[in-house]
Amino acid sequence: MARATAFTAVPGWGGVLMGCTALATAALSGPPDDGSRWLWLWLSDAAVAATIGLAAFVWKARRSGVPIAGNATRRFALAFVPGIVAGAVLTVAAVRTGWLGRLPGCWLLLYGTAVSSGGALSIPAVPVMGGALMLLGVLAFLAPAAWGHYFLAAGFGVLQIVVGFVIARRYGG
Image (cartoon, rainbow, N blue to C red; front, top):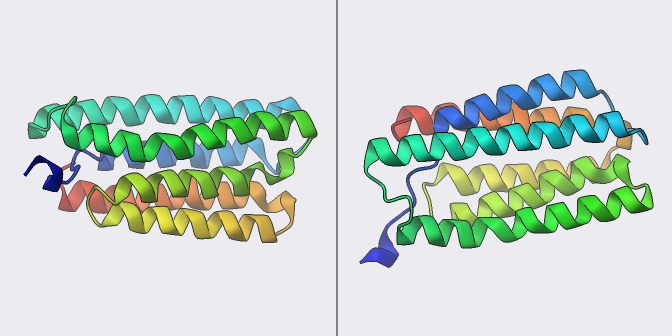
């Protein structure tokens, strides 16, 4: 019975806030370049978004009675975290090799993988968002590197906001 429980504490309003910070970061950062400013803006946004996401998850889980340390949460984390770790490792490799211009595709593809994997154990909107993020990642690799911030704005910003609203309206915040 516990294995059949879907992970429903995905925070819609937290996703909306995370998307707003990504849109601001895309506007501030501009296209990917070899300087450290672009990278630090996006890494800072990732830290802010992770904090928002975790806080919103705890708030929604407590409000809806989902156990924070329950089986559904543990399974979601076990499916979600490997894609995030892979993204972190490849970010370090990209910095070391000067491959910063292709980080948007990498980040979108791997975050999409994490969201799709974790979302398989969640509500239907989550794996759909993961697939859309992965598609944006592929398109970012195919497009000129200078368009990277547009793809990040589309995925981490607009898509996150739209799906966040859907989750908030249909699944209680």
